[in-house]
Image 1 (cartoon, helix red, strand yellow):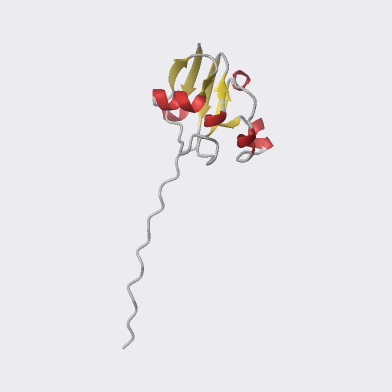
Image 2 (tube, helix red, strand yellow; image 1 turned 120 degrees about the vertical axis):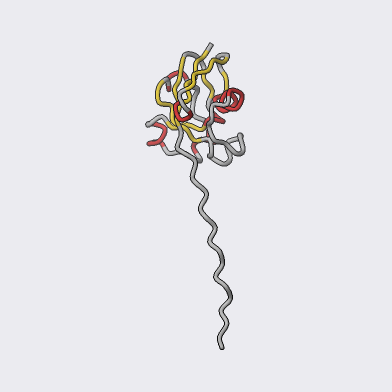
Amino acid sequence: MIFITFLSSGGATVTAPEESNLLRISIREKGGIPFKCGGGLCGTCRCRIESGIENTDAIKPKERKHLTEAEFAEGWRMACQTFILRGAVSVSWPPRQAAQPVRAAAPPRTDP
C-alpha cells in the first residue's frame, strides 16, 4: 500500500496499491492535480514531489520535454508519467493561472 498526500488541495492523504500512477490516483481520489491530456503531451500536470521522491519510478522521456534537469533535481515531475512504487509521497503543484480578462474591443472610430 502507498500513501499520497496532496498538499496543494488541503493536505488530504489517500492510499492506493503499489505501482500506481500519480495522476490516476489524483483523479480517482479528487486530489486536485491539474491536468488536460493525461498522456504527457501538454505538461499541465507538472507537480513537485515534496517528500518521498525515492518512492517514485524513473523519469520518462515525455517528462524531459517539459522539465529541465534542474527541475528534476528539485523534485518536479509530471503526474501522468509518474508511478509511486512503494511508501509515501507528498505532492504539491503551482496554483492554476487565473483566466486573463478579455478586453472589449474599442468602439469603431467615426470621424466627422
